[in-house]
Image 1: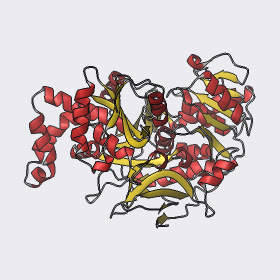
Image 2: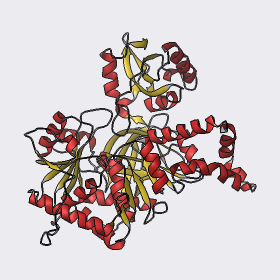
Image 3: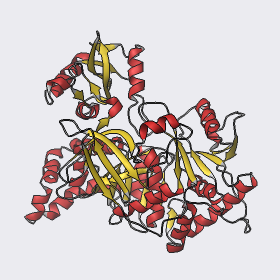
Image 4: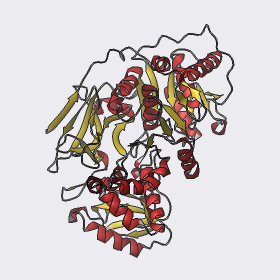
Length: 543
């Protein structure tokens, strides 16, 4: 077994034995007049009072310490208010994905013994499994006699169901200690996020990435969050112009969409050759005294994001090197993070340096460590994690827990990674998705998907292991725009294949004009695509 270890531990007594409501109290005492909910003009001091009022209402509804209370809502102000109110009362928050069905919600609430779900009216349906509470309901006066429940750092703060692109969902309980320690580890971002900053919040807060940046990062740094309940391009652009956020987190797919739209707009003005040249040579031009020219080219593009953007954060999936490079050439700091629901999101964060390789997502954050095990000849191995952010195991699932934890307490992420000479990690793919050919060679779908997605007319692609005529092959399903033909797609695939070793070539593929099924973080659900292929839902094929 080949192992590479990285470890960084440091005690921070301030955070030990602290729960999430106490963390909010500390922030409200430090920055009482800073805006917390930007669009609504709510300060930290105001927010604390709103939380107490909501806690009073939920107390009247029967919520007590130890209860599991669900939140089923888009990114509206009542989401974080209700979140902290449940913690105020000593409850556990069940974070529910807004894209599921009543059947799934019934199963999830039954599994977690959740009897009350705070939801927007649009999600309410008839059920005997639990009761709904209108999350938008106005609260009355604060009950001054209702004090915060005594909550220990090892009490469960949240429960989430893993979605992922493969496998059956499992329940992930995270303690207050896990979450507070994630907040503590965000100190590595202190040079880019400042008190009073505006962080744009259009990532769903029920997902661990949105939860980590929009709830934890803002609270920790005294920043404000500008909540956006839907991913509406026109509304987002209007928000950027009006509120001019300094920090913008998004999944890689959205950063790619923004980049492509910017490039298309510049090309429409017949200026792309000049703009691309200046951006590519920006550092050299600045050295020879032409910095004003570089800034002149950068400004109209930066104005798209409001003109004050300082930090862009990508997470939830791997970011293509060319996308990251594009934003860095604009003079923006672009951070790539890696994490799982089981690690409260970002447990690895990259640090921009001159020597950094694109596509790297950094090393473990404070008080966490990793090992890369069973490396192959390419230096790719399985990532194992241990530390303060790593959860203690799936709810009521001892069989799964025995499989993912070793005797030393390391957690098997199931992700394949490598390490560069700077000590930063690179994502290679999911172990379950690695294609093992009949020859014994390994093929990593992420590498090929990153290559094929650049084909003009291809909207998305899923590469996975499949059997054709009794032979294990690397198969691709391509979501394409109208007008693309199977013959034209085949020509593009053949040209792309030449960029990689012949054993990685995709010579069997299917085409569809429908969108591929995605998770909430815009990752393709490979197992669903493969099932659709087997079920004959993609008849346009080349095999």
